[in-house]
Structure formats: structure tokens, C-alpha cells
Length: 569
Image 1 (cartoon, rainbow, N blue to C red):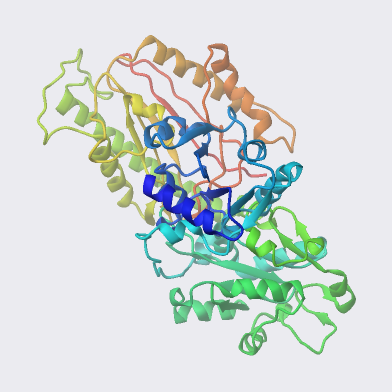
Image 2: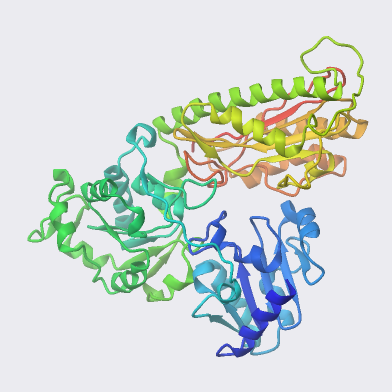
């Protein structure tokens, strides 16, 4: 790590202008929560492997901001050259930079890896001391990352209508109606899950997330898909043409955003020819003053002069190519459209959870027997009385990793399985307190009858995505463990029984789940819930996660469970 920091500081000093600080975000060019191996720049420079965080490197310090899910993990992973900054406890990164960096300081960042919202917030914070945000021409981390993983060429896959439930034509029609409402003539779509959802495609460019590295631009009469063309088969290209979508190279989005800003972005001649083959209500006739399918006449088109960009997901690099006075900075209309599952997606999610639940039950039954056979536990499902702890050999012992692998095997046997939805959190004893713990074969813990075991896991199926947690104890839990779990149960009952008016958000309901814990001086350092994709990202638009809990005493065993539900509003 010392060599990496030294190399980066050398590049900062030689940069024009010289940089007083360098920001290394976790995000990729699409502001993704989970990124590919070659985009894990913050992990490379800091050694911290959590999915959320931001690194700041000055000439004298190296700081890492992360949230409460990762405090324990960061303490373990950061070297003594790094200082952990706890979000919610320590000053925010923009406030720290504004207060601690000198007047007129230059703060460098790759504009592709930072959102419009974030960049503008930093610029406001910098204004009081005339500090400036400098967009670097290249990513300085990439220049020192000699062993950076190569780009993978993974195929784009069409997601069938039997699973998506809505055609691309229908989705584009709805999106164009939104453009009309907001007086926008085009929208830049940068979120990988939104591009995948809109065009009904999937891929494998990011581990655990069936997405493709791609951008999209949609206007009142055209649609574009920006992707490495080596990933597009003849069949997929034909599918895009049938839907009036032109496939262009990934990097072409830069020049096309400039054209979009000047209202000069047009389909190629070949694509225009294909447009004539789409359904009649979507046909385009250049000689008409009214364009069928988009509801605009020429006068209306002239009145729609805004370009829509989501400030939370569109990178600052693309925004910088636009006239800021002509940009509609508003959440993408696809975020809510994607979150509200259609009937086919809802049925798919139910079926996926039934199969996934069966796999989890198989796993628990197998685990129960292993704990009896190897460690002498009485077992959940046996009538044996008492407990006799056994001595086991190295070949017999059960570890966090070996158990996790077994769980994946049960899931893999189910119909439509395509992989895990995130790395399985298989954690014994104290490791269960690390919210996003990731076991490694060389260092993982062995099972213990006297310790809690938590596994937080999920899978990707063609018809749905799952995320489910179970916590079990194969021996006798302590009084504190039982009291804590009872408080969690009370919170979940209170949340599950809540009646609230339409429009109430999850943040307003969150307190109901926490009050019983607060009474005992306890809390948890993460949200109470999140949305979930339909064979897409495991984290989607935040909503309330209704949880059901089961608490009962069987050989003094406490069982607790929760499952994600989808917001239907």
C-alpha cells in the first residue's frame, strides 16, 4: 500500500494543475453499487474490500469513509497508513476537504466515477475557500495499477418476454410519454440495471449482477444502445433492430451526448430503414409534421428542449458535455417503473422464492444433521435429549466456507438458477456481527455448537432475485442473545402490523423496527429494508422490508428469520 500511495502522490504532484488531494470513489462509470474486478479502484488503493466507501489521498494523509455496515470490516482491513472515517460520526468528506485542505486547493477526481449530485455538492463546499474540483483526463489509479484485470467480453443476452412481462416497445412508449410531460427531447440512461430493464437484456459483466456495461440514450423518435459490439451477437443485433434500437460502440456515448445537446443526434440510415418495420403506431415518417408513436408535432418538439439526466446515477463527465441550463436534473423515470413489478414479474418472484426457500430448508436440514453427526448437537428435528460434544478430525470439520458452498449447491439444483445474487455471508460467532462479512477458506471460522450461525444469501433466477437471512443456534444461547432477538422480534411485529397513509416512505417507518432495541440500548448500523430486482440487482429502489420472525424455544434454541418483500406502490 505504501508504494501505491507514493506512486499516486507523485502523479498528483506532476498533474496540471498539481493536486492537493485525490478522491478515489467506489463507483464505476455508471455509479454502480457493485462493480467489476477492473473497476475496484478504491479497494486497490486502500485494501478495504467493502462495497461502499470513498478514499481520499492527500500529500500527507490517506482517509477512508464508509458507513456503519463496514466499520468492523474496515478496522480489520485498513493498514496503519489509513485513517477510518465513520460516516454519521466523523465529518462528511466534502466538509473535511473544505475545512482541512488549503485555500485554492485542487481536488482531483475522475469525472466518470462521480455523479452529478456528488460533484456539485463538493463544488458548493469548496466555494468558501476558492478550492476547485479538477476533472482528471485519465484515472490516476489506473496508471499505477499494473496488474489491473483485463476487460471481459461477455455476451449480451435477451431476457425473454415470458420473464420480463413487458415488451421493449411498451417501455419505450411509456418513457417517451414521460419525456413529453417534462418537456425533454431526450434522456441519458447510465444505470446498468435501468439499461438492462428498458431493453430487456441481461449479461454477466458484474459478478452477482446480471447486467451489461452499457449506456442508453432515448429521444422522442430514436433509441441507442452503447456497448462493446464484440458482446453483441447477430441474433441480439437483429433483436435490437426489430425494436428500433441502434447499437453503437460504448465510447460513442461521449460524442453522441454532444450531438444530443445540439439536437443533432439521429439514427443511422440503416436504423431508419428498420424503423419502418416496427408496429404501425410506432412508425416514423420524415415527411410528416406529426411523428406517430411519440405524440409530438413539430411545434411541440421545438418546445421540448431539455435533456433528462439522473443526478444520482449520471456521471459528471457526461453532464459536463451539456448546457447546464438545458438539463433536467431529476431521478430517472425508469427507477420507479422498474421497482413496480408487473404481474409476470410478481409471479416470477413468488415462484423464485418458493424454489429458493426449498433450497434453504434443504440446507438447514442438512446443516442440522451435520451438527449432530460431527459436533454432537441435539438437533432441531431430533428427539434426542442432552448434548455430547464430539471431537472431529480435520476432514470432518464444518467451516463457514464449506457450509456456504453446500448452500449454493442446493440452490444450483433449482430451475432457472443463474448464480448467486451477492457473496454469501456465512458467519459463525463474532463474525456474524460484521454486517457484510465475507469468509475466506484460509481464515474462515469452524462451526461451534455454542456459537450463533448467521447466513445472509440469495440467488439469481431467470424469473426473480432473492435475498434471505437466517440465524440459528445449535446449542444454548445466552440470556443476552435471547433478549436481543426478542427485541428484534418485537420490532418486526410492530413494523409488520403498521397502518400508514399512502405515500409514507420507509424512513418514516424505520423507527418502528428500532424502538424495542433502543429501549435496551441497542441498534443496528444499516437500513431496515431495500427493494429487490427481477433477475437484476439485489439492491433496488429503497422501500420497506417487511420482516416475519419466528421465535420459539426448542432445546433453548432461538430462531429468527427475515425475508424481503417488494414495494407494490
